[in-house]
Amino acid sequence: MLEVRENVSIMVGGEPWPDWESLTWTAAINEAARSLTLDVAPDNANLEKIHAYFSGRAPIVVRSSHVDGAEGDLVFTGKLDSKMPGMTSGRRSFRIAARGTGAALVDNAAVHSTGRFRSMTPKQIAEALDETNCRIVADTGAGIVIPRFQITPGETVFAALERMTRDRRLTLRGEADGAVAITKGATGRRHAGGLIEGRTLGDSSATHDFSKRHHKYIVRGQSPDGTGADSTEIEEQSEDDGVEGPRTRVLIADKDLQKSDAKEYAQHLRDRAAGNALKASLEQPGWRDEAGTLWTPGNLVWVESPWLDVRQDLLIERVSGTQTKSDGNGGGSKASLSLVDPRAYGGKKGKGNKSGSSWTMSEDE
Image (spheres, one colour):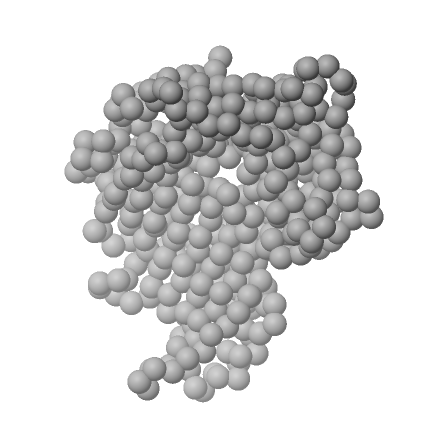
């Protein structure tokens, strides 16, 4: 594999930290905070400095550029979670772990004077529950209004938000600047070039798993408004023509439900199951596409491999970028990409999709 090396700069507590051996950052479409592991260069002469810098909740910022002299793209903004000094057979090590500032929503309990919300957007509810003033953003597809929502005592902010958004085709994604994005998932953006077997595709594997797909999805529930059958006996369904029936999944909604919500939820269950049935894992040199853009969760990339039986756009669900300072084997920058069919996150089947007929299914107008 061709060796590619990023120009990485690390700031700890507002000061440059050049003495490191390797790092890995991870961003995912369904995680509210990015993560970072960093192996600090062990140095007895600077032992006190190392422990002083990497202590408490030290702020850490990582930037990277593929062009010499450039400031670099923001990759990670967060705070130290833990430090792990160690000694093995005379070799010293010092590893730290950090998460994006959005981790505050993952760790903190959802506290509110009433715990009840009416006619508010997911962003408004998130901001009302966020005591740490974590920056929360929402894309245009996340501007829906939630008629009613109530937190469960003891749950974290993230657990409450995930419960609120999961049946509305929304997800929580940690951003490079530490913000938390409430998003439909699929960004609609496409990476330049493509990953093609025999040309640009590196080490790779795919999983074609049909076990979680069903022919029919039925959602049942009740609405707090009204007394007729349309309120007390709500039932909607969606079908996946790519699966031979009878094969049915029934879901009983665990919260108040509107008839229109039930139909959308049934479609969401169908699309997510079909999308998650096709997954791929790829390892590529460098952290960027052909145009120099960092691999980004939610973006599309064309993948073409006869051996993997994949010829279509896939959506990046997770990306991990690693780099070591050593030369030769194990050196340089690498990206590990986890991809799914875009329908898992509200995307559509691409017009150029030439994957096997197993991925045919109903498409809503």
